[in-house]
Image 1: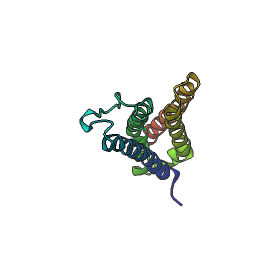
Image 2 (image 1 turned 45 degrees about the vertical axis):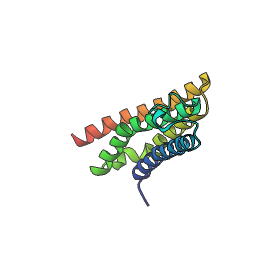
Image 3 (image 1 turned 180 degrees about the vertical axis):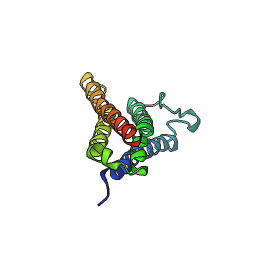
Image 4 (image 1 turned 90 degrees about the horizontal axis):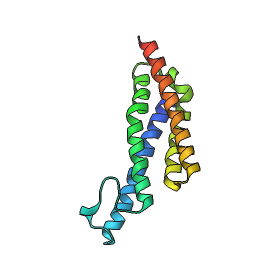
Amino acid sequence: MTAPTSLALAGFIAWTLLLLVLMEILRARLVLSGRVASDRIVPDNANLSPFMQRLARAHLNCIEGLAVFGGLLVVALLTGHAGVTDPLAFWLLAARLLQSGVHLVSTSVVAINVRFSAFAVQMAIGVYWAARLLLDLA
């Protein structure tokens, strides 16, 4: 059986890639249909629909999180300390999926609070992992 840490890392990467592919499919459709010129596509989708703007932001949030949380997962795997990350690895991935999913569907105050709560869970897990890994590796 594959360790939860490995699966969570692969899931995080796959989710980030899925958001990127979705964004590029939608951008390509806009360009190919003639609704937007290819040289008018901007990284944050600021000149596109609100959904496209949220999609760009959700993808960027994943990229930002992958460096930190994915980095901790990689450190745990490379140093043989996946026992530190395994118990909460799927919780981290679930919180990331929730944060991105809510980001895509709503900008209501409730949705923003849910998104922040999901991010807070990720931060708490990350701080715990960083502390444990630093202590275990010292």
